[in-house]
Image (cartoon, rainbow, N blue to C red; front, side, top):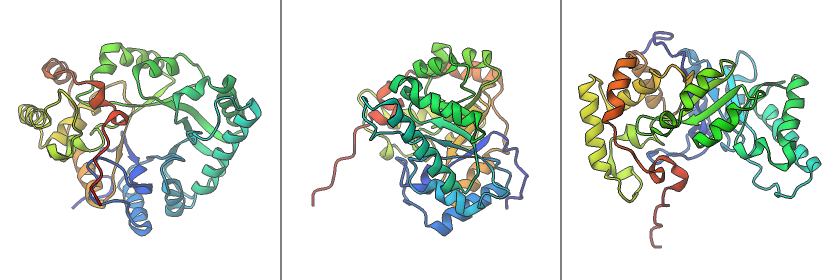
Length: 318
């Protein structure tokens, strides 16, 4: 049985997209009920998880965090600006700023907070879009005390470099996992280390759950990718590095990265939460192990590494 504060979970950030919306290729339970979601949130906090990750675009996630904690003694919360999908590209600066205000105010109401701990752009393009109006408005809100830290959720190394080049950016979230070596090969870790004022959180360490599921049937069908063969390779590596599972291997690898400050892991059940908490009892990979495993890994296409590019499942005939 888990004991509160037994695990070293200082790097664990509870991802809440599954708390607010059905999400993940390996998700077989769907959206949890409000009561169950609140139990998961409170249990995570009770066991020492001190940071939650959410977004306006995560369905009911912000509201459920607000219900769970009511703004009092709440964990530090990183939320994201609305993706602004309905804002026209030719919208005026004033229209863009109004959209920003609406999103921030909605987050404050949903989370039941007087201010936001950290707010990220959900789209890196908004760093410069609309003549920079989106970012300028956020900076003014930060100066007014409505927002603590500002940052960006990025999708590619190119976006990461763009964000790291901006001095007002103090938080970056990026998709990083054992089989995605794009970040290392393009030099993102060194660039992140050079910005000591920037917090880096890694998400998608299980690649929407397909790595942890250990079931090739949940993998997307991507040309040139042998899902079953890849899982066999990862299982072999897990045994080689004395890990209890592929999930343990994946987590230990990311935990061993000295440039990663937090690891966002989404969970839709209490059982998943407990399994992930238990994995934090193990040791992170050493630098020697990281240096040893990386040359053993094949290179995978972006069509696998970026879930936005995955083929949609065929609809069953009615």
